[in-house]
Image (cartoon, rainbow, N blue to C red; front, side, top):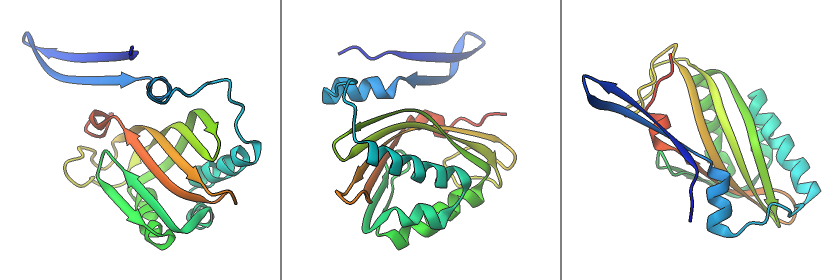
Length: 176
């Protein structure tokens, strides 16, 4: 398997002090799953997905929550954050919007197959306060978090599960 990526290293006095990695996560997903990019997907699901992303981008927590099933499952594998149930997501989403001022969700690419969507998106904004350890973001820092989300829908086009993957090194890098 070939994985395309970019590595940036910061050197001080002949020693590497920091390193950043960026990978084309959608290509990695394609190689791991055998996904065919010619799959046209499900137009109704794509519409639902776009409305969900628009709610997140607008900071509309109530509308975003309305897309989830009662037994919705959430996992952010980089931070270890997990929750079950629509109601459990309310404080998580509100926390994101309280923690990151001017939060925006920018979609780079989307793949839909059956009732599953894979979305490559970036969350950007400005840290409203110091982030909890081990994240280095301090109040006023620019936040850029590249994610790959696997979102599973029911046949009724409700979101039953969302698993987020992020380059963990991106979580540890403040942007000035």
